[in-house]
Image 1 (cartoon, rainbow, N blue to C red):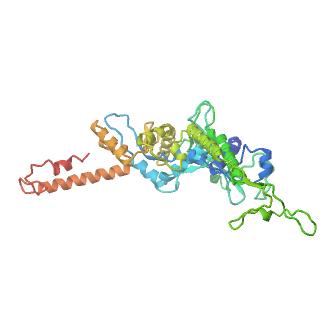
Image 2 (image 1 turned 135 degrees about the vertical axis):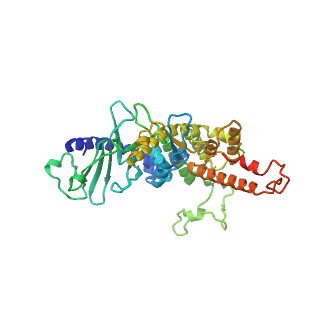
Image 3 (image 1 turned 120 degrees about the horizontal axis):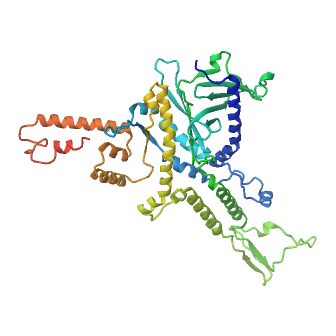
Length: 493
């Protein structure tokens, strides 16, 4: 058993990380509620609240979800390379890394990690053995929530992880925590208010106690010699905390909700023209002589008409409220959300008319540029996660390889014609076949499959040519045509 920290020191570290995790909870909850559309009318006045109460408490014209999802849906890792440092041996996509990625269903869960980071400013990836007691240990990669996890870094460093914590509530009335250190893991639990248990006096301050009765259920050696949790940070800064994708548009989102609520109120109160009448003699009660002010007398319908005995009586109606002013304000605010978040205006429009392909490409340039920046930062995090996965398998060479590289799908949306045209132009410049296939959007697994299929096609063409009648081509001609086996052979990479 390797030498690590004492149980008291592990509890101290756990408490420090818990305090920081608690500090983050309020902001994360707010950002997540806004993303889900749980938005209060932040700019509503007291007079408005007194008049309408909770009428609009569940209403939100939620564009924050669009702002967060727009970049996340374009970030798709498709493979990993592990360089050798030898320029004569360009690395191909690593097949073992692809198998590990697929075994943990990360082709789907990586999308969840990117959305969580966009919404909550952070997401976490935990790498550990799927079954530590198996004959051949296989790694498991899981995505963890920002409300449950935290990573601590060495003083003055933004990369060297010195500790990590995962904390969650169990169904049995206990709160559980696992402390990850470079040399060891510590597992704790403590009763919550639901358990009704009373802690010993020695544990009152910290609350944490060993998760199980046996020592091996409390402390576990860490064979990776590295903290196995990686933090994905959205919009990382040097000294400030990372921020969610929709943070700068939250005030505008609140103003937008208020403006739409005002429009709905105006549509209820003044969108229908109010009628008026002057010089009208009200009917009188024959017994009392009092005027009868019955609203039903003035309620119009298809089979009713107004009439007055006074020749000077006049009828008319007021102008209905013009809601166009509200529409103009709402449009202005959505344009501001689009500009601040660099989300294409087409994401905020119900329909697109008479817009050229070049205009659409220009409109998406900001989002594409933002996504490229994210692939650089997230790529480093995914590479570290994959290094940890190889360390779990005992592969120190790839587990410590600094030349790892994440392969991303193109972040730009293009038509098929545009995509293939760009690939053909790159081919004319001499770009290698496999790189062309990557640029075309195929995954490493698809490229390997196509390469084998091309080799099989070339073998079939060669066999057909070998058994052809002398002087006769594959197509039955005299063999002088440029088509046939020579054209098929050109497809082989």
